[in-house]
Image (cartoon, rainbow, N blue to C red; front, side):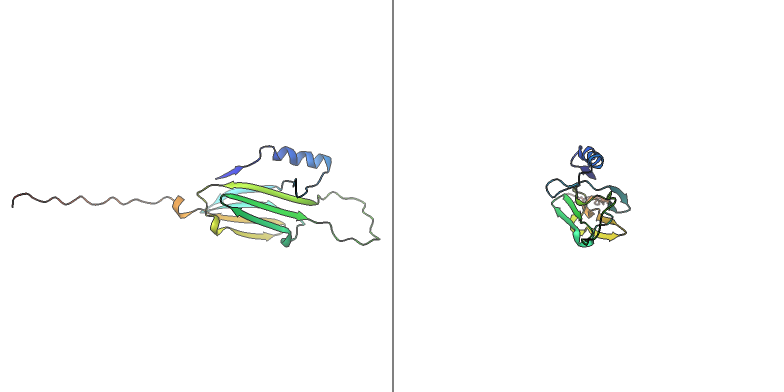
Length: 144
């Protein structure tokens, strides 16, 4: 029900980890995610530790879901000297193509403990349903 839009995204993520380059608005870093079906909905969980809730942007246009987030530096005073900085800063983004069988009008989002969880219900038209068979047509007798 979900499709990856960029097969080279994982290679970019690994290269960014090795080089220490952070994401920008024009070339955002990937964010790790899990996607699975749970009952009558799809669940997408994205790791965004240290990202403020107001720095997350979720858009859906037709069947394209886009999640962008920005981890901003912690406000520092002039007397702070950074000794070690391993946590990536910058812009993170993920785009997913959603199947037509998902109800993009009823997506819900929760953010807790650095994990953004999106729940996308399966559309009613995509759920299995029974088709009733009509009764036998009535036959009229001829002549009487």
